[in-house]
Image 1 (cartoon, rainbow, N blue to C red):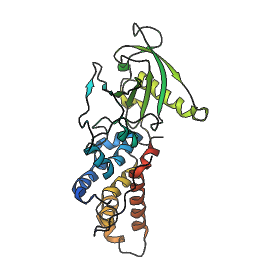
Image 2 (cartoon, rainbow, N blue to C red):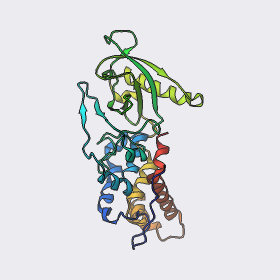
Image 3 (cartoon, rainbow, N blue to C red):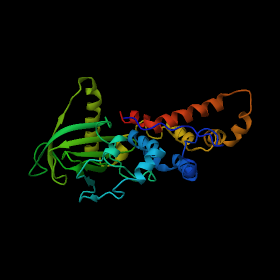
Length: 288
C-alpha cells in the first residue's frame, strides 16, 4: 500500500512546501544542510531512501504516535547492533519497515530496518551453526568489515545489514540463531531473472569479508549522487528562489532568475516534483 500523497500548500508559501509542514519549516531548512555534510558522501541507496521517507510529514506523525519510541537495540560483543522483535508492527510495515525509526535522525545516525520484501539488495541464505570458525565454509559476522545491524522478526530469521562507503547489502540468515557464533552459509538464489543482482550481492559480501579497510571496497555511483542531493535540497527549500540559490549559487540566480530563459525555474520545479514523488512512496524504488 502506497503512503498518502502530500498536497502542495496554498497558504502563502511558494510551492515546494508540503501541506502540514509549515510548523516544521525550521526543521526542514535545517535538514537542507544535510547534503553538505560529509556523511552524505557515504550514502548508499537505502540511506537515500530513508532521507526522503523521514521528510514525509505523515511518516513523522506516525512515528510520534507509535510505540515503542525507544527501540531495545543491543550491541553484541562483535559490535553488531541487534534488535529482536516479539511482534509485528503493521504501521511500520506500511512504510516498508520492521519498526518505525526516528525521522529526526539522518541516515547512518540511526539503524533503519527495511523489510527484505522491499529492500531487494538482500540475499537469502541457509545457515548452520558451526562448532568453530576454523571449520571450512564457516564465518563469523565480525569477519565482514562493515557497519553491521541486525533485526530478528517474529519469524526468527535474522536480517543483517552490512554497510560500506556508498554500498550496502542485506543477508537474511535463516538458521543463524546465535549471531555471535560462527556459521556455515549456503546462499539461496531465486527469481531466475534477478540472478545477476543476487550474484552482485554475494560478490559484495565476499569483498566485505576479504578487506581490512572499507575504503578498499570502492565507491558506488550512489555515493554523493548529485541528482539526489539536489532533489533533497528542493524538498527542503522554502521557496523556488531559495532552492535555486542553494543549488546554483546566489550570483547565478541574480543573473538568470528573471531572465528570458526558464531553464532554472523549470529545473527547480522538476526537482520539487521529483522530491515529493520520492517522499510519497518513490523511495521504495531506490531500494530495488
